[in-house]
Image (cartoon, rainbow, N blue to C red; front, side, top):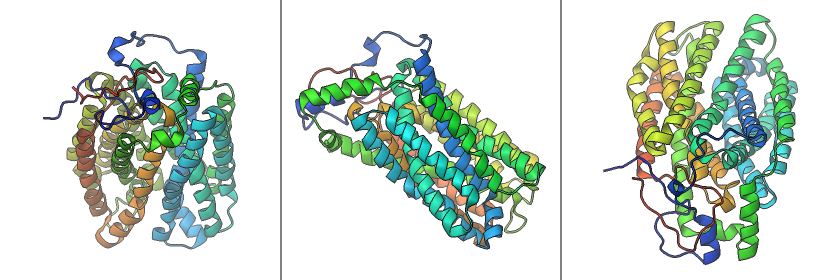
Length: 459
């Protein structure tokens, strides 16, 4: 039987065989969190608030820029004279390049600290995103989106690692839920911007990319006020004193096994989120291939509503994961979404589609709200800049063909069929993979103990 409550395990892996070297073990092991003082009611310090707010704004900015393409890629296709199926690869190249950014900025952050790589990353993707407004043709826009994917890949892992390393450990669930919903907030802001600039003022899609520079500059300003992670500093000192390298920790067999598992989990997660979001605005507006045939304004307002649902789900279930455990909360959300699929994909009225998409995103982003805490807790201190971001983004890479596949299925079998046959299997996959894994809820980052990893199954 799978047991989900109050589960902790060291982020180094499963069992203590074979024993890692003492230097590596000291970097993998952390104290039982139940033996440490309760910090659930401690107010955040200014540095903790700035770190969290910067991560939230950075992730919001990333999602805003990503979903601009999702919302207007039919308009861009028309302007550049390319098919929708070909146009869908704009999102694919962005997702494919995310692991590159995660590796580049993640390795840099583990060697030089979190702060400087994050500042460089924000500057990079801000400029590239802004330049998309001036792309003269599809090829140039494709290259810019490829470069943007590199910057986007570096943002989530580093921002989440820095924020979670500073947030009090018994409040990670709540702040994890809020942080991950920067993604939904970015989608919401993109939807509102589309309503205002395109539907309201009749402006070109290019204005949306031009607008994206504003939240990026705000995030950059806040990041200049963030201090370096004390967890990284302590871990860096320990690595020097024990003569342990980044490679030693990464290639530990237990760390490698967990790395592969988390990539599979993140592939399912990313297929779940992109499968319920990327095609949906096009489905709502499409008059052919069994689309809903709604107006662009109606589709945008539905997107606003279901992103509000996403934010509610992320915060609520992220918080509940502190009580019920990371794994059970995720599995519950994924399974709860299954009976919502007919309402989400097969409804014929705008009202029911709005309700179905709202409930779907409560569940999907409810599961996602646990992920920033879950991945950072499952990551060894020595490679936390690299580990969660790369596993997350490699999963994104493997799920990158979701939109082209859904679009191709929609053109041959209809939009509703495409949504159902891609969403149902992945909801089951998320639940099963999550329950097969472990968790390290409440683990104390950077608290170095002895030489033997004490690991136990959740429960």
